[in-house]
Image 1 (cartoon, rainbow, N blue to C red):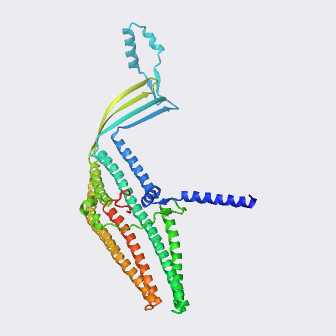
Image 2 (image 1 turned 90 degrees about the horizontal axis):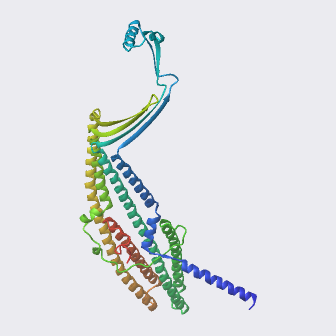
Image 3 (image 1 turned 180 degrees about the vertical axis):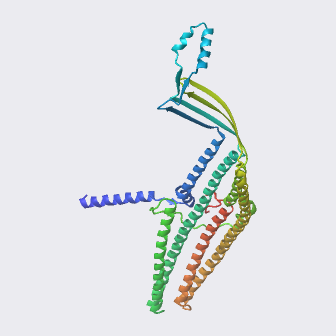
Length: 466
């Protein structure tokens, strides 16, 4: 074997291996996989998880209010002079009294003459003091209990808000995915149109060569082919852009994503998915958030009232003192009652202010629940309308296909013009595109209806594309 033949063989083997590895590495993403990836990689979900973690830390912080409040202080001091310094002197009367006491004790009164009649008392120029105090709240007007309830409620609200982001991501992912399917399906339609035009072009050339038609028919077909080529370029660019958008949204930006581009058929009647909207209202995240908002305002009102009530606490204190080189420890029992008298003057207005906020929250909840019911019905109407559009599009497909077949026969029989044939071909292409758009619209409306009625599990087979 010559060197050139060996080189060609090596090149062929290398190309084969490269092509084989690429084909194995190319992954086809399903809709549910895209939803899962979008949820895992979306910044909103990541931030929402962090806010839930923050709320849980606030829960733990609020729970510590049940525990005793413990504080300790320690002090050591040294003075440049004695803190207690006082000059003491004895008068004549005091000296006589002391002399009498000495005589009674059987001592010599002359010893008194050796004692000073005045002296200076000096005491405490350094010392140590340590205090340890623990106070256990017994009653605080319900502020501790309601504060803990409010902290738990905030965690629940953060969780529901994450569910809202979850719903938005599911809906957006499916819109991007269905948009890409639509473009691929239109490309398939364009491929079929190309084949039709090639056949029509061949028939026109044969007719022209046989003298049965003029050159104008051939040129008309070629103009139509150029139009289709221009549309193909637009579709290719649209597919590239849509793939980039979907890849970025699910967290694989820069990858040439490949999806399952098959267009589903035999889509169920919307009545299959219909549910009682009043019952479904309780499953809506928005409805739950409205209830939580009312509950939060109720707790805020209780906290405002609790701030005006007395607080009771019991405790103990331990005190260590060393001011004269001799340490002493003392234990003290404590009980405190605090009544916020001055707060009553402004506090009643604060309570009334919060009561109004509570009333507003209830009214907004009731009004918004009605709007959510209207939204559910609107989502179902959109789904029903999309289904009817599919049925109409199917009828148009049958009629446009038959119209195209008849115009081909008429053209070959010489009873129809090339323009009529191409118009029929254009209407057939439009019917296919309308059907594709109707199916994509149905899929988007179905997901929107499921989210509107609180059914948003991405693994639910009734939501995913059949």
